[in-house]
Image (cartoon, rainbow, N blue to C red; front, top):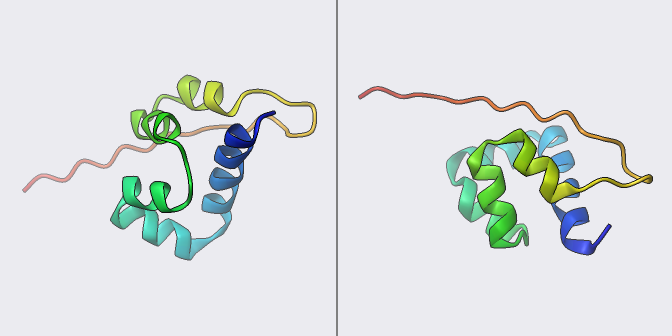
Length: 78
């Protein structure tokens, strides 16, 4: 697995475990991912909320288990 795919995997694992990271992500998803070092194509995949696209960006590896990606869409009516 190349470093950029590993980086996305590690980013998502950290996001799932770290409440402070989730709070920062909620305020500015794109900005938080950029400052976390993700490439633009990885950011685009996450923002697409397409589980297949995100999994494709992560790739598969014997060392790393398949992660189950769940997408939540929040709609705010003003």
